[in-house]
Length: 238
Image 1: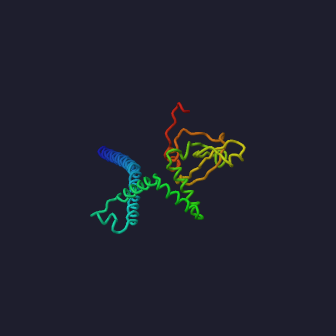
Image 2: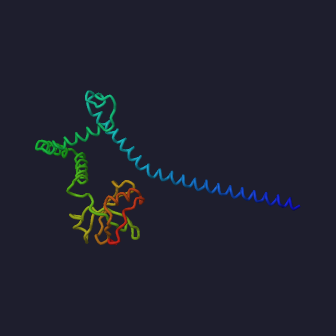
Image 3: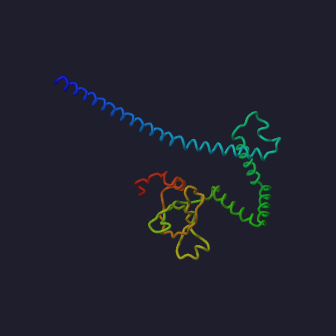
């Protein structure tokens, strides 16, 4: 009887040991799986932005190459003189061409032809409005003497209690400013994820809160939908 009890006791111990061993192995595999998933997501977060950026840049370069090549006469096309296709060669040709156009436009003769062309375009209905708008936009964006946006502000919009980021272009002037009862600012409200679209509103100066973040940081914050947060404000700036 005693031997039988001893055998049963040993069998229970063996089952308990096996159960503990299986539980430990399960925990080890679960931890290993969690680590592998974490490594996978980290790898995606590290490589995806770089890979997508290079892919889009590569596609853009190929598109420019194809566009430039089609604009050239058949006897002067880039592929006819090279044994292989070199990505980016068309982009280089385009940049050199634009630089030459800029050099020509800076001279007296070039300025004369530009003024003549603008005079002719201004006489064409609808086309003149589109050209004028595009010219103003490009002059604003590429001008080194002025900044498209001066600062970032936060304001309550579209109602009290809801806050939104806006970009101040300038203080309000002209007829609109003259018809309003208090000093106002021009605030551009960009949209997510495309900050080039949005709307312009006129806001009283007293109703906006100036932010310490730069315009570039605000754009990244808006485009990412709040995922890319601006740098924290130093304690001295609070």
